[in-house]
Length: 113
Length: 112
Image 1 (tube, rainbow over the protein chains, first blue to last red):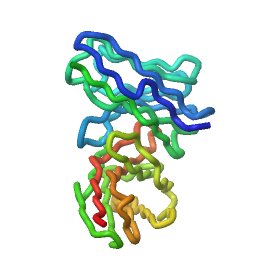
Image 2 (tube, chains in turn cyan, orange):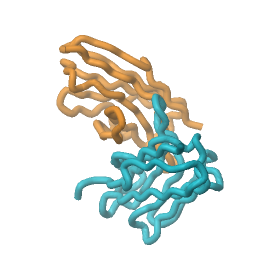
Image 3 (cartoon, each protein chain N blue to C red):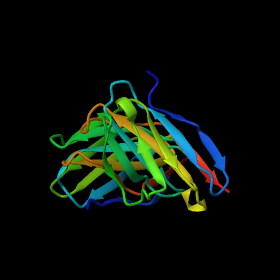
Image 4 (cartoon, each protein chain N blue to C red):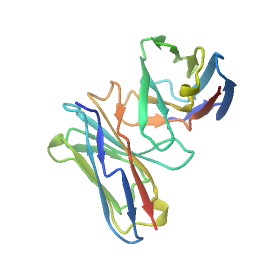
């Protein structure tokens, strides 16, 4: 197992387009998190899943954002009608259960032009 | 709402110096506290995890301590090296078992 994998690593899109990111957690990790990070700031919580159930969404996650984790394995984060303010690093993390060590992927850097 | 603060925001030291990074949090009802390092443009690398029942954890030149009652954790780096230059982030898992709450990080520069 090579850790948490995120795809793509970089994405440049035009304002108004839709984008989708994928996260493959470590095998058998039932907790999965999405975070967003802008330059010079700490990661901001977006949402998390326990298996396939999405248990919490941040107020930062407007109705343009949607996340899924079908079958409790990989997860996708979709942003519709992208805005320049969506430009950030999107980070995914997984852990075996809610109380154990969390492991992060390398992130997807989104640039909206 | 849990708030995590890291002091200092930036630190520059000469190689070989021992240093301490600080993390404070407002709600002591946590299950664990985790320290990460982040290199520019990269994801987060886990350094140490301290369970709420523990006082400290050590890994090589790193030692992290936790004082739940005062809402504080410290990360001690011994004999710093230029390769330690990175941003160090602390986060904790609340007892509700929900989100991880991060601080803003401490940007460390170790000069050769």
